[in-house]
Image (cartoon, rainbow, N blue to C red; front, side, top):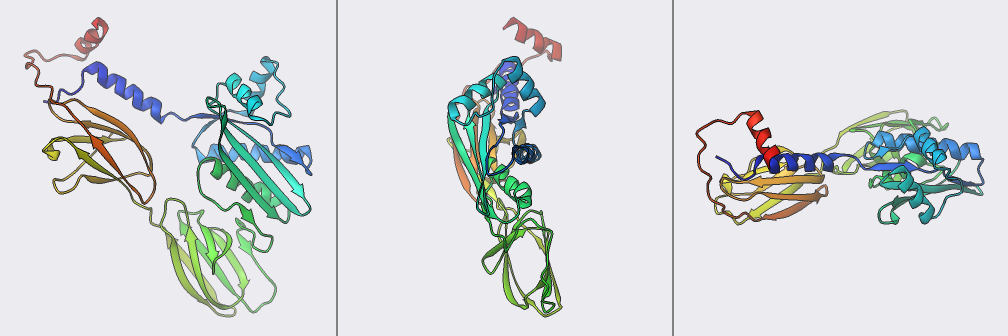
Length: 343
């Protein structure tokens, strides 16, 4: 019989885990503009909000709600570009983070800059940037997507050249002597490099691409790089359907208990099996919540962050607390609730 935790402790632990899995709140301020129209800056701000919502890392404050709260507080947020002002807005909105940024045009070059400000700490914790030459249309797609992913801690390309525009579904030329490269991946969104040059993200089609031998590399965060050598002949076609393999993340356990097989290891609420020969198990990359129990011993709780392709060692310590007398009467759910109330 496992007696590591009282009912109250178990309920508190469940509440603790629930709070850990809740998303942090983020609010996005209007992007300041130089060399663009206010309407263009507003459209880019709206798209940035949409992208952050789709990435599903934060709980994003809806624009209408944000404007309503600030209006009720009679706070004028236009022109708010410094951290102190942003933190004040974050406090009014009761958000964990605030995003501030700007979009500028200099000659034919566009630049997007943004910062993720921790309201509690009162300082920036993540900076994001993207620059490109060409038409502003690509800023609305590739640029905003790149900045949004950077703000979520995802590694992406931060530049784009006009001669190789990423995130376009199809690119063509007019020589008539090239072939077609049709590049797909599962999952989608992998960055495409042909002989070291960045072209965009999957799915992607290159029409009338010069014939020759090429090395194609696909890169996606948390997945192993995919490499394939291809030979493209004039007016020929080459399809690449890459199935990307996730980088394994692992946790290795080491503890003071002599018999590891008697230990129950819960990771993110699910039981993970360990064997006598090894106490290493595969986990999801990112934050993992650990609960370790054993009969007649104190419990162990920890939170660890594991990067893709890495192994994190967790050392747990558990003390023997003896056994409790065997209860002759089986307690009902209501008996347990009554005990909690009496405590």
